[in-house]
Length: 268
Image (cartoon, rainbow, N blue to C red; front, side):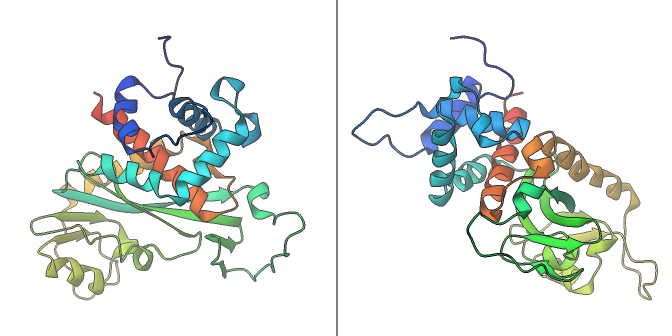
């Protein structure tokens, strides 16, 4: 077997993904699954249009159609869930990053209904795009473990509040665990929510707080691991800029890129 090109699946990575794929149906032979997924990862890395996927990965329409079909079946969710089960939960970190929406994703489909452009500061709830002075943006929220690997992922409009948006991302936190977060997440509600689970919120307090909660500056230094994760995630150019019109397709790409980051770590 020839040496894999960059960002193609290694034998180890393929051994993780292959058992999670749908069984091959009877009938006409189809393009090899590994080849198609390599084509999807090629597009994910380069940010090129789907139609530009090289012929060595099979027809570009096959790569796109299989990506969408398996997204609807929840295959990409299953792959991300499978690799992220190995997370180290002693210390977890949460943060978000904003992504600019490309003009191709902002435009409506030809012949389809024209979107009404909302005023500044409001959101486009249907597709996870928010309008602000900088244009359309989407925000990726991530909860990562002590190794800087993603546990939970979520999309919101670009102007969404970090703390309120992440309120439903901490179900897996339990007794003795610690959450690190910046001031955007400082609220009594979140602190009480974690305290009920037996976890401690080491969140940098707002400067105008009257009752300042306990805070460890030493532990807080490890919060840079979530920033490192976003840095790795944005090496995939189809993530660094949002080209997808549909939020579910974009979220599937975020999970595929995150699964790749996980598998790289596991193969060390």
